[in-house]
Amino acid sequence: MSVSGQHRLQVGIVGGTGYTGSELLRLLLPHPGVDVTTVTSRAEAGRPLAEAYPHLRGLTDLVFRQPDAAALVDCEVVFFATPHAAAMHLVPELRAAGQRVIDLSADFRLRDPDLWAQWYGEPHACPDLIETAVYGLPERHRESLREAQLVACPGCYPTSIILAMLPLIEAGLADPARLVADAKTGVSGAGRTLKTPFLFGEMAESFKAYGVAGHRHLPEIRQVLGAVSGGEVGLTFIPHLVPMVRGIHATCYLDVAERDIDLQALFEQRYANEPFVDVMPPGATPETRTVRGSNICRLAVHRPGDGDVVVVLSVIDNLVKGAAGQAVQCLNLMAGFEETAGLMSPALVP
Figure 1 (cartoon, rainbow, N blue to C red):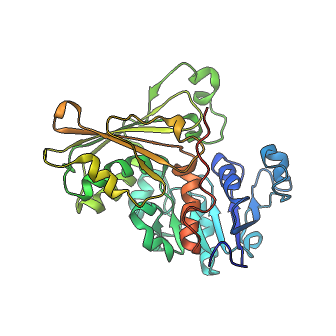
Figure 2: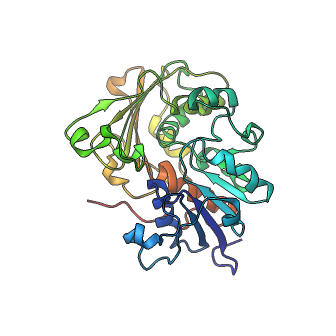
């Protein structure tokens, strides 16, 4: 299938009123190979999308529908932009009907259902489907994604951290027992909910760590990096909330005793053919503003003071490469489109 072919992929979105649902609509409505035919929302059923999202006026005349399998019957691919523990209740019915699914929540990311239950507070509803899911990081699982029927899109923090650490761990250069990720996110990472800690008056002019005792993305990052290294990894991951809307900045620390390796060349070669990973020149420090609204991950690698610790800086837009954009990138691979289709808009600056 190609974007220029006659058939246009029929796509549905479950959970169209959150930030990731909004981003999916922004990216998919003008996509050259896709028709968005169904968008669901329990709270907004019956309301026109263009009324809920004035920025989409003129792009769609769709109306939100109730989220059930009957509403999605004509969709070839269904995106889930729902809270955690929602998709797993509807996905089995869709998969039984032969529909392909791209889940942006955490429902199918962890391979161990008991570990999933430990972190998400309830038993997994369809543990038999977990093993069929392909982890939606194209830079690691591109070929598997081409044939995937169920995709578990990575979390935003894991995307930024895994891409930063991957070259050194793949090459066997970093000590997998001593990994540190210090990451900051904008408030949109908390979702489109009304909670006191995320009110403007509560978070403006402030900066704090959270999830220090353990964050749900921790086992996900450990799982992926452990598969790369061939064993368990020791990872310290501390997320922080900063007073901006979009963006993640991850500062990653890896013990690399080897001095004869050209770190810049290693990163440039690893990502040479990756359309959405930009390895910046030596000495550069990427900024979140340079990826806002884009599907790009920008990286820079440093060895401060020629010491044993290598520092990798990684920035993404948490709603695009960290969520909706990466999901569309997966869709492009699954459908046989150009991987970059609908995703080549540059960042919004200023």
